[in-house]
Image (tube, rainbow, N blue to C red; front, side, top):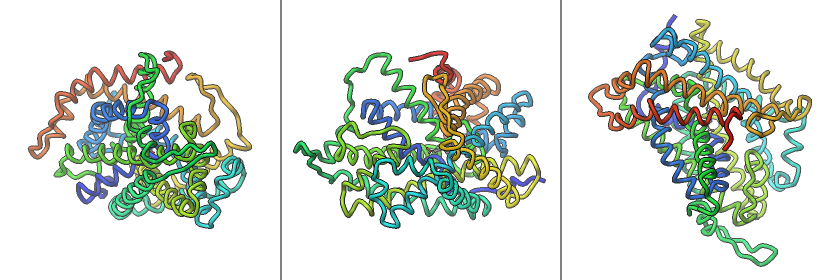
Length: 465
Ligand code: PFF
């Protein structure tokens, strides 16, 4: 049974907004601003932008073109093109399966914070230890994860056009509206600290966008480059089969050149705006030291910032977490859709049945990840020198280890086995011009494989910057 034929996006806008929905997620909102603050502000922004236009464009084009040309999910796509490369489809399938286990847990944390702000307990969220007490508790994180997962499964259950596309078309413009609103509000902030120092939002904007070249050595530059590179993968949702699946739903008359540029623009624009919203706010209320990394930025530092804003802070906090929940939901939907679509093909089952089964399996897996903060707590040293508990371990295996490896293999496959002209044909369907054709060929054959090797060796701890 060919279950794939029935699913497609209605047109270009549906595709762009759904793919942008996948790309825009917690990666844009908590990881990008933190990296920008840590890695030299404007310097990071320039490097990231250059990487989006080169590596990001190359990897996104590859995934979407493979999907649309083969009309297959990742699991089958590689094998359909060349039987010997079937294994790459299976390898690619592993990434969303691993990410799904923890992305829904984080979605649950965000849902919990919405409830906290809705019930006017924003001040509690600002208290020291609130977040730790929540994630280490036994029942509450599982409960909120299940609520988030149920919402995800419901939309996937409804299908591509009626579920994913319809939802993304409403949510994505709303998200932009909220993020622009909070970013502008951030710029108007002003605060006098206990030492009488006045800090303003505009000064915070300077910290964000002015390139800071202090202490930039060759080694430090490489470090920033690698940070930006791994952020790019995660942020654009590339090399994990997701964009192959979404590509397979795109109709042949859609101009991929234009759509892909719009997705790149959307994802990078939201990341930039997230920085504009978060960095000035954190700077005004806690100075440059306030930029915590990872979850603590969003769940510990920001609630303190909202609290310091006074009455408006509770409302801003609520809007902020609703926005993050939307962003996380459209990303989680894309991960689940990829799993469901692949399994529908593999087991010849209906979407409805598969959404329920996958939903139940991942509810169990995500519950185990929640337990990584209590019953199953450990601290495992990683090859790259960091330590990880269960959630970080999944993140490390999927993003730091598998993604560069899969990208490397994909580049070898497209650049050297089937040749870049295979992709050119798809990009030039209906007489459209593939403007970045030469750059694409050069990137996929030479530059990207080298960069992926460096990134992979660094994550595996074989090479340290
Ligand atoms: N791109 C999303 C983000 O930036 O948060 C995260 C993501 C979505 C990662 C889908 C992986 C994925 F398969």
